[in-house]
Image (cartoon, rainbow, N blue to C red; front, side):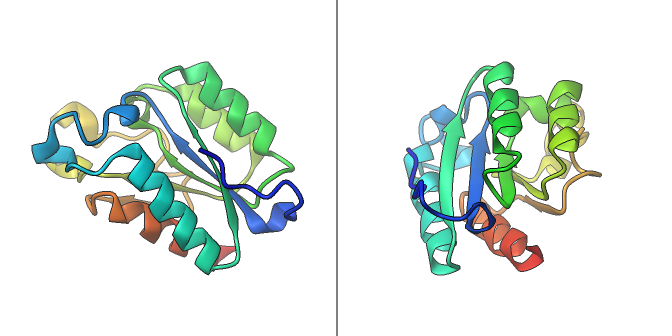
Length: 153
């Protein structure tokens, strides 16, 4: 789902990226992730962005390279990125390098609180680069991430 106006200025656009398995929101472990879906996430983020005068483009992929390509393509098209890298949070130096290379401010968002999950989930390759980090607020965290990122822009 993309709600980006192609005529919108890059300084008024955001990219929302969701990594592996986030297409399973609403189905996967609802006791942890809730029952809201990725479509709900996209609607929440888009409505929040719109209220702040921004357009948003959304990309979800279970493939790391697709996310990296989307980050590279965003360099001159958006003002910032909101990303939930899913399991790549804990394993992808390449995703970190892509975000660092484009030098766009980004918000790292996670539906659950990683500090209260399994030990291997407590490490993030992105946390020290992120301009904003929102964890453990459910899908509402996407709205918070958009608000906080826009406030920095």
